Length: 111
Image (cartoon, rainbow, N blue to C red):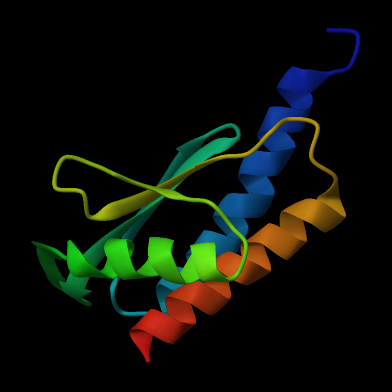
């Protein structure tokens, strides 16, 4: 309460989901984005309008992000998602840097 961490979790979620939604419009392999506070996820599918889980993309994205200095984990029932759980003490600049790395990794995999 003293540090308003609940409010910070909501801010992180809003920033992250705004980025994810822009990417969803840009990359057909992003099927869904969702989150609760600082915990967010991107679900990957074979293509726009195709709800078939894409299990290869997250594996490649996690590897690509790791090469760029960002640790991620795959998630989801079919392991076709990437989940983030951002520390509540992250600065806005650090958050933007991490999101930039994630988008670069998605872009590299999407081609």
